[in-house]
Amino acid sequence: MAKLLIIDDERAIRSTLREILEYEDYDVEDIDNGVDGLELIKKKKFDLVLCDIKMNRMDGMEVLEQALAYSPDLPFIMISGHGTVETAIEASKKGAFDFISKPPDLNRLLITVRNALDRGTLVTETKVLKRKASKTRDILGSSESISKIKETIERVAPTEARVLITGANGSGKELVARWLHEKSQRADSPLIEVNCAAIPSELIESELFGHEKGSFTSAVKQRIGKFELANGGTLFLDEIGDMSLSAQAKVLRALQEHKITRVGGEKEQEVNVRVLAATNKDLLKEIEDGNFRMDLYHRLNVINIHVPHLTERTEDIPVIAQNFLEEICRDYGMPVKKISDNGMSALQALPWTGNVRELHNMIERLIILSDKVITEHDVTAFANPGGGTNIGASTAATFTAANHSSAPDYEKFSNFQDYKDFAEREFIKFKLEKNNWNVSKTADDIDIQRSHLYSKIEKFGLKRTTE
Image (cartoon, rainbow, N blue to C red; front, side, top):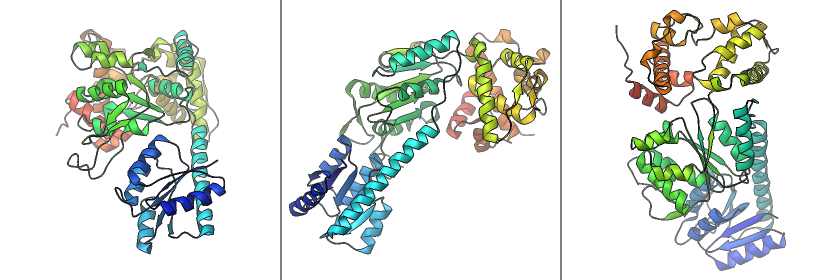
């Protein structure tokens, strides 16, 4: 039975509409003002809202805007006793399904309600089909570490426990988070992802908690934050080790009290969100350095899942590589190529600084540049992004596995993180120079956000050299 909400400050209109719609077997609620109507929309799930335009306390157009910001697919039918073409056009532009003048014609009302509900059903079904069509990838591999991760997901996902996922970049932390959501009781609700490293520190609070119009210079309209968007579902905070201390304090409060306050706002909003977090950093070291709150760490780290580096589970490389091979060939509409035994052994011997993400890119490169059978020679020849040609000396030193004489001096690296930073710096420098320091093109080329790339350039002190 479809659930409808009527928002109108005229008792007679509310009673009439409710009587008509309940006679048609709809479940109907009504309220006499927009402010309380918005609160009902946030607390309950409605299939359709009929809303008056001229009301006290809050105008119907404002109700429409705020409701659709919170629930974009909720159909709205606007009703007014002062209907004009201009009003109808404005309502349509703001997202209303239709506009009806008072007093409403009975047949027109029922047809419009039915069409709006049908449209809402189609939108929901389309989203479900899209989710099924682009289903979350399987976690591939049968190594002991991967088997343990799968077992932990099965145990933890149905609970409400918060999970901290750790591991190097590209190891598959996001995939673990997706499966925790898919197998949870919240699977039918949204999974909202936030990359904390890709958002400037001055904007992270607005991104997470939203902001009110006029709360700062560029806040030209109200914005709903990720916590509110994830209400009833799961919020995945990726790279949480890069979050500012002020934002950490607010996240801690949200986890403790299940309430958030928008930037520039005073009213508290209740949120029902399961938080999953991921990081490639050692948070205990970050706590020692004063960059991360210990109380937040303990709040997030109820369950810890560590995703191992690909070089720690090389026995999984054949099944992952074969899966990527079939998937990419299918996407390109070409016959599936094969990898020789020697070629597979060569893949397993590579350092994989970029983890599973790098393996995917490598397989795609081999499919494009190799013949029907991918050999050990192909793997060696195409192991670096430049294909062995036109590479700067420093980048070649880092990425050319075949030429050991040009390898970097490993003695100068005190730990694995120092080496990863070195490799990342050289790779970004190479890509920037290759793209003539076009930051937008380079960001697209290496598949990161432009703001994230700017942060990396600043972190590594990279500067364009002029002849």
